[in-house]
Image 1 (spheres, one colour):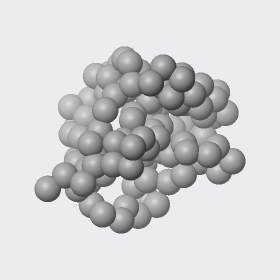
Image 2 (spheres, one colour; image 1 turned 45 degrees about the horizontal axis):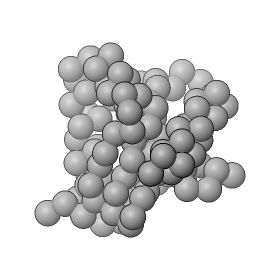
Image 3 (tube, rainbow, N blue to C red; image 1 turned 60 degrees about the vertical axis):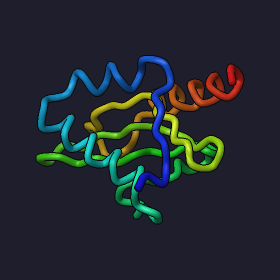
Amino acid sequence: MAKREIKFYKHYFNEFFVAQSDKVRRKIAQTLVWIQTIDRLPVSILKSIEGKKGLYEIRVEYAGNIYRVFCCFDEGSLVILFNGFQKKTQKTPASEIDKAERLMKEYFNNK
């Protein structure tokens, strides 16, 4: 039984998702199912972004590659997905975090 509902904000997540290979898409989809159904998610799956109140990253790893999808919570059990990217360095690019933060503000302002 789903504990959380997932929604996409505009087209950002979908553009990232369709650009991935079938196997990566399946892994991302499986991770989203876990987010919907697992009560207490480990930080290996969902982690808050330091210094960015309310912003989280969904962490997906497949075949040695790392993918991140930014999200936030709304109304308790609603998860809003924003932009995603393939991580190529140790540190998450500030431009990706800034974009996610901008999209989160936009989402709440337009609500």
